[in-house]
Amino acid sequence: MRTLLKLISFAGLGLTVIPSFLVFAGSIAWGTHATLMLVGTVLWFASAPFWMLGDGSRPTASPAP
Amino acid sequence: MSTIQPRAAAAPVSPQSLADRLDAINEFDREPVTPDRLQGPGSFIGLYAGEHLAGTEFVIGPLFVAHGVAARDLVLGLLVGNLLAVLSWAFITAPIATRTRLNLYWHLRKITGPNLLFVYNIVNALMFCFLAGSMISVAATAVGLPLGMAMPKLNDVYPNSVGWVLVVVLVGTAVTALAILGFEKIAAAGQVASPWMFMVFVAAAVAVLPKLGVTSVGDFWRVASERIWTGVPAQGVAKFSFWHIMFFAWFCNMAMHIGMADMTVLRYAKRWQYGFLSACGMYLGHFVAWIASGILCAAALGDVAPGPIAYLGAGVTGAATVVIASWTTANPTLYRAGLALQTISPNWKRWKVTLAAGAVTTAAAIFPALMMRLLDFVALYGLILMPMGAVIFADFWLLPRLGLRQRYAEWKSLLFSWPAGLTWGITLGACWAINAVWGLEIFFLGLPGWFIATVLYVGLSAIQQPARLQTARAEA
Image 1: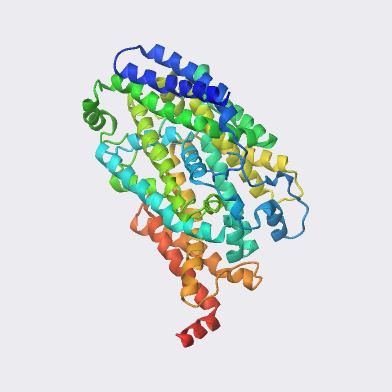
Image 2: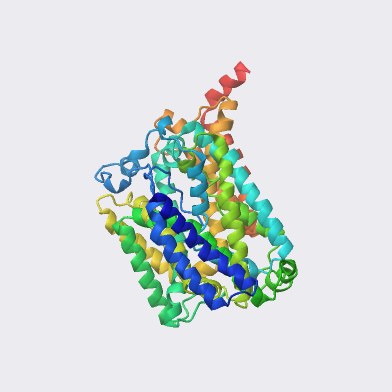
């Protein structure tokens, strides 16, 4: 299950970033890139919290600019 | 960003003395970190990468463009400045953090005494309020997008519309409410958002490159020099050189490395060399993200409002990123400001103090100058807290070599260390004088200031401990 969630997350990250390079290459329109980014974002946030949030044993950072 | 430090929300708040009030809030961190709680490098890679990807990254990159830095100066300045920041974490902060295993609060308390630490805590809290305020301003530029709100301009000091005020108040209220409810979930959301946020920065910049005339990788440097970082500042804005960029990149986190605030983080490191892992934050957040947001600014024809430029590159996702990036940083910042301010009035409940901190923060955020002058504010923030970092450095490394006692205030049970207090005040006064007399800009003051503070603290400690100095001389 954890592996599946990770796969979904990485697919989400891929959909977030890859379409921009296709816009740069002239393969897709900017609107398609924006839509795919949104889909990628939804996939990321729907899956990543379940495997990224561990046991709560990490140190916290200081607020920084 | 959940934590091994139990939150102070549960700390008792009815002690009598000033020292007791402060201690109650930091009670859970009193002891050095035990070996079983030390963390591997993975924790620090994630932590630093996440910490330095915030809403303010959307402002800093465009402000560099507005300040007319040339492309070559920007790239070289960021490379060198970020390297110096990493070296500061590695050679100044981490060695002391991994030897003492204490957070900044408890270590500084031994040196300054609790009353001076109280003052430091309040100053720090106010800085946190203004930092959170700038994040609220940044988020407001995205929230106001669908409402057609007039965006603040580069030289705006006062709010330019009723809409801006209403949106800032709306965002500030939401941020404050969440900080009152507890920021654990928001901090966790920040941790989850970091990898995605980095991708959004990169994607948004890449997607607008064709608009700037970049159609192949080979075009990039020419367009970067001619259309993005042109070397020509916007009207009414000072021109930035390589030195501005280098010193800004080095000192924008001065409070964390030279100022020693990240002792609180690095005390969990198994080895001092983990300080080098700050490079993940520097080169992802303060190199790639700043360059990306600069590209977006140029594509938006010099617009510096974060919401519109992020939308230009990434649509709704871009606007959402601005809100999330700001929110996830503003909340813990406001929460910590509330905790620090609680020491003033310990009988107030934490929610009331956080509400007051939120009100101050939101009031500050209404003024766009806080966001548009972010570079100056960040430099000032680091400069104000830096002298105490120099005091810690001198106390740890230099005083023993001169035969002077470390942590003298703790040893003598002093409430206020006058050498540390004078060092802080005189250093800031000296920096102000250097600025006023020689016109050295605020971005550069941290370097002479650190040496002034170090020498002052050693000298004043020698005056405070004459008997020990004479004994050391006799033994020598």
